[in-house]
Each structure stands twice: as structure tokens, then as C-alpha cells.
Image 1 (cartoon, rainbow over the protein chains, first blue to last red):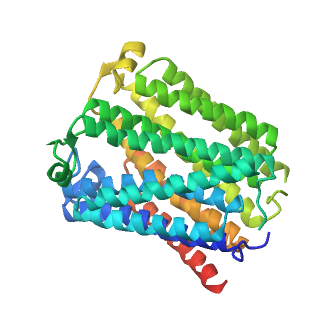
Image 2 (image 1 turned 135 degrees about the vertical axis):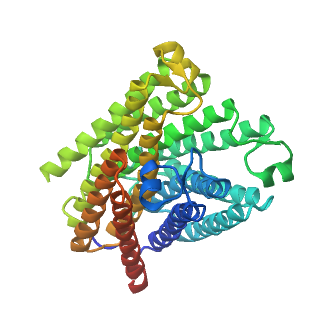
Length: 147
Length: 147
Length: 147
């Protein structure tokens, strides 16, 4: 197979996928780093190996990072599946650049304001990401109807 | 790249992806709406901005929606990856329509009966979705062996 | 569309996807089986239908399987998106075989040692999987820059 990198819609998707996966991986790694700083462990073998107090539930600062990660997963995975369908369905590169760009900025901003505990910004960026997802779904529906 | 929409296996996948992502996004949005109706907040900044009682754990009706969402994620994401591999491996459109169709109906029904708290229906629809996933995995394994 | 199975990078991806989805589905099914063995239920309708004690939180042995599943999801889904982008971007089959192979072995080993409660092995296999993911991201970034 030839590379799809000459296809500007795919190029936009590949860059989007890279950025959004970096966002997810950062949040997951950061939850572990934050747990380490609180010197707590959820697994007995972690407390035995690395020290720290064995706890039943993560401390609030770790739970916050995990909620941000859960929110990121719930929003980013559907978007990445839909984005790839849009690429393979021959979707417009101009539309992809706008929708993918808005989504990436909204999710990076959502991550920042979730960790910083800032409202109403968290809700605002969540809604912007949601609207970008709905726009992508409508675009795909339109491509399916037209075909 | 040309659109794959002329490929009936891809068309079935695109429609399946749209419906399953709508299912996931509905459950996520519904968990937030249900939390709002209970007038509770998990994040201090939410209680401060929008009112509501700050709680350590979601009330039972919110926890139920989140369990339905967790179950949907655990089942739908693997299916969407496998479905796309099946499309790109040149899988049969007739097989795709049957397996994808059964899975979509089973997952929509699972969501409904989970929210309604109906057993043994929830287990039945979970198992039907699981069997569809296993059938898809066997089909992919067969394509890999034959190639 | 023709099958991509003649493309060795895609073949490696298809096999990887099959194995990693089997890993995820095993962990999800195993969490349910483990809950059954503890004779506990989280949903009132499950206790009413199948018997068992209604509990607010899963017993420790079920919670462990679910943590292994959560860890698997957080790591495997981004890898599967990135892997597919690598295939479609025309990535090298030799590189794919090495990175995909290391990741699959590391995640299977991670699942085993998480369920067995063995440290420092769990951290070691987590880190190996993480390094494989970072290597894949750098390869994709390199393909994007070169194109």
C-alpha cells in the first residue's frame, strides 16, 4: 500500500491522533506520578515494594487526575474512531482541519482547566469538544446519505 | 485517496461506528445530566460555580449510568478496532452486515435494560454482543490464516 | 477495495489488534467471573435475579481485575490508534514487527503479573509498553515531518 500521507485529510488526522494520544498518555502517567507524590498505594505489593501507605481510595489530588483522564477517554476515543471514518470516507481536508483543530484545542484546554479546577471553563471546553464531535458525526451522516 | 464508501463492508462499518459512538456519547452526557438532577457535585469548583452538595461518591442513579457507560466502553472500543481491521482486510460485506447489525442491536438493548435495571435481559444482551465480537475475531483470524 | 493483508505492516497490525483485544476482553470477562465467585452484586437486580450479597464496592479480588483492565484500556487503545496511523502512513513492516511485538508481550506479561500481584515486574512491563508507545509516536512524527 502507498502511504496516505499525501492525502491532506489523513495528514490532519495523523497529527490529531498523535496529539490526542499524547494528551491521554500524559494524564495516565501524571496520575501515577501524583500518587507517588502522595506516598500512597492502592495495591499491597506496591506498598511492600516501594513503600507508602496502603489506602482503599486514591487521595483527592490523584482522584482529580483520574477523573480528567476518564473524561478524556470518554470523549477522545469516539472522536478518533469517527475521525478515521471521515478520512476513509473521503471527507474534505478543509472540514477536517477545522473540526480536528477545534477538538484538539478544546481537549488540551479541558485537561489544563480540569487539573487547575477552574469553572466555568471546564464546562465550556467540554461543550466545545462535544459540539466538534457532533459536527463530525453530522458530516459523516451526510457523506453516508450522499453516497 | 478515493472514498471507501463504494465498498459495502466499509459503508456498514461507518454506519456502525456512527451508531455506537452515539450510544457512548449519549451515556456520557446522560451521566452528567443525571448528576445535575441529583444536585450533587464531585468537584469542589462545580459545587461553587453551579451549586449542589459536594459528595465523595456519585449517588446510585448516577453510578448506574456510569456503570452502563463503563460496560459500553469495554465492549464497543475493541469491536470498533476489530471491525475496521475486518474492513481493511477485505472482509465480506454480508458477514459484516450480520455481525455489525447484531452487535449494534445488542448494545443499544443493553444500554436500555441497564438503565432500566432489567435482568436477565442485561446478561442476555451482553452475551449476544460478546458472541458477535468473538465471531468477528474468528473471521479475522481466518482471513489472516488464509492470506 | 482490495485487502491490505498483502501489506506486511497491516498484517502485523491485524494480528496485534486481535491479540490486544483478546487481552482486554479476557480481563473484562474475568472481572465478571471473579465477581460471581465472590457471590457479590453491585446492581440490586443482579442480587435479585442471581442471588449474592448486594455490595457498595467490589471485593478486593474483583477490584484488582478491574484495575488491571483499566490499566490495559489506558495503554492499549492509544497504541491501537497510533498503530493504525503508522500502517496507513506507510510505516515500515520491520519497525512495526519489533514495536508491536514488544508491546504485545509487555501487555500480556503486565496482565499476568498484575493479577498475580508481583512487583517490581508490573512496573517494569508497564514501562516497556510505555517505551514502545513512545517509539511508535516518534516514528509517526518522523513520517509526518518527512512527508
